Image 1 (cartoon, one colour):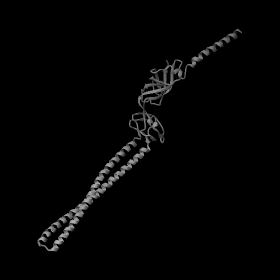
Image 2 (tube, helix red, strand yellow):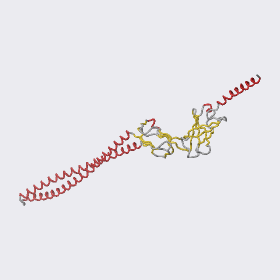
Image 3 (cartoon, one colour):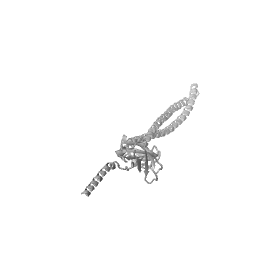
Image 4 (spheres, one colour):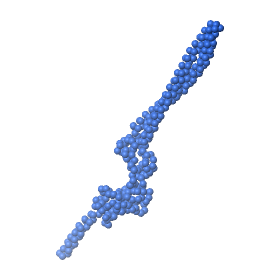
Amino acid sequence: MILVALAMGALTRLRHEASEETPAAQKATAGESPLGELSLPGRIQAQHVVPVGAPVTGTIDSFLVDIGQDVSEGQLLARIASHGLESAREEAVRAAQNAQEKVNSIEGRIIAARLEASRARADASRSRDQFERAEKTYLRQQMLNREGATPRLVYEKAEREFETARAEFKSLDELARQAESRAGDLVRDLDAARRALEEQNAELESATAQSAGAEIRSPVSGILVARKGEPGKLIGPEDAKDLLEIAADLSQLAVIIHVEPPALQRIRPGQDALVIVADLNGVIPATVKEIKGSDVTLSFVSPSPVIRPGMTAQVRLKLE
């Protein structure tokens, strides 16, 4: 009976010790060692991310860069198909073509008008010479007729030739004046048409520039870390603001870990930590930058270009 009583007492003591150890063991959360050190995985991201918006709303025509790919400043990233801008550009092209055709037509008409005016003026000049000769003959015969020194028929013939030459000259001179006037009018029309062409070309240049503005180019060099939508998808004003995101200054990186509340209470901003990246020798010193909810962001200076946003790292942090 004494042995049975001793055995029962030992069993009761063991159960009591086990019950005292259970709450202490429950204090260690996921990733927390008994020594108060936290070890959790996290994802690396850039501290400096530049949003790249679309200059216009429309349909995504194509993405020319994939996530994780290096980009350089000025590189073409995507194209946005804006039906309104393209329609305006096509209309401007048609208007500019019509204006150019009008200029070409007027220039051709001016050449023909000047040639016609030149011929008409040459005919008028020849007629003037004939008229002046006929006038001299007529005036001489008129003087002789008054003196009775020429036959009447000769005088009348000279008079008829004079009247005929004068009428012909007046007619041809008027035709030449009209031809020269038409050429002058066409020159003025050409000046107006050229001004209209310049205006249409300026509108075309503006429409082309706006259409080209539907091309999205990188404002900085870095890595494309995010993009919204797919080719063929319509993007609205909100999506157009930050259609793509580029990580710049890859020497300044951060890693985010998710920490459960018990351990979260023992972390503060400015606290030192270590970051371990697979396939990279050694550890990287880091600092707790901010705490939002259960997410803890740690910043560090990258020692190697091998480390890129999107990679996974292990974070070790001593709890206070």
